Amino acid sequence: MYDIIIVGAGPAGLTAALYALRANKKVLILEAKAYGGQIIKANVVKNYPAIKEISGTDYAEVLYNQVMDLGATFKYETVLKVNPDKTVVTQDNTYKARAVIIATGAENRKLNLVGEQDYVGKGVSYCATCDGNFFKNQTCAVVGGGNSALEDALYLADICKHVYLIHRRDTFRGENKLVEELKKKENVELIFNAEVTGLKGEDVLKRIEVKKHDGQTLDLDVAALFIAVGQEPKNEIFANVCSLNDNGYIEAKDEVYTNTPGIYVAGDARVKVLRQLTTAVSDGSLAATIAIKEMYD
Ligand code: NAP
Image (cartoon, rainbow, N blue to C red; front, side, top):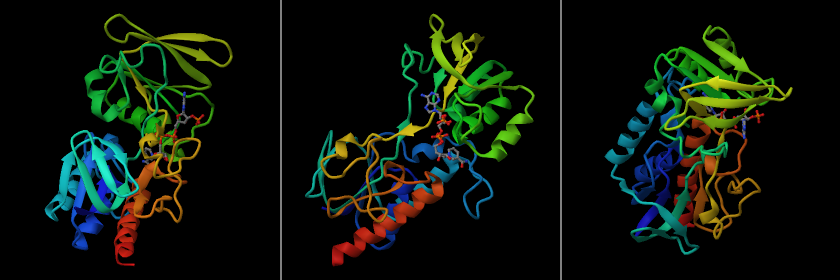
């Protein structure tokens, strides 16, 4: 029996653990993949208050170690179900807690192109900072118009010979500051009002087909395509204890309450205006604090 089971070890989940452990609670963290969540894909974080800059992996490691030093139990297990009685079922075990915090974040959105998944590891990637170095001095493309795509293009511009940044509109969703930095890069070519429609190459990716909205089709020789078109949640398994909005995000009352008592949500998995490190850690601290408070009510 645990006091709190936290599902997901991104910044929200680990911060929830930090707060619960500091309140002397017995905490189990369940993670399916790697601790750190989406932030490990950030080459550099420059908008976290009081930290001028830190790499995403360093941030995740410091936070993880901070939590483990306080005595968390951490298991790499995939959660299959959370029940209203606060039992959590994984592929290996069933655990029971007084409270559960769902902090599973969101996953990279796919373009759903023919062959997209077959080319993963062979030229298609969802993480420029993880895979960019494989394509040193080669030509790459990034698709997307948010902060992730802008940051990926900036990162790749310093590694690759040439970088195409392909966006489906003519204005970026991401921050102006990043756009201005990108415009200074001589090896970055912006392609607006265009969509990637095809992937070509035998064993590995060699070319992408890009359709412009004016009807023109481009065949671009690239060694890699970095897909940065946002995230989507994977919350279907929680639908028995939470209500989900049309996009699959968990509807939260007062930020962290789901519609099942004792089950809370924190971070990118929930409906929210801003999905950032700052808001994820805010959610984590709040969810743990409320979960603990309600144990005594
Ligand atoms: P995002 O902000 O949701 O942007 C996704 C981009 O992909 C949009 O430009 C969107 O186009 C485009 N897109 C979506 N579906 C597409 C499709 N099927 N085909 C082509 N393009 C498609 O996602 P994100 O950039 O991953 O960022 C997610 C969150 O993390 C945001 O809140 C962002 O601010 C935050 N973030 C922050 C930082 C930072 O602060 N340093 C870094 C990275 C991410 P439209 O614009 O036309 O919709």
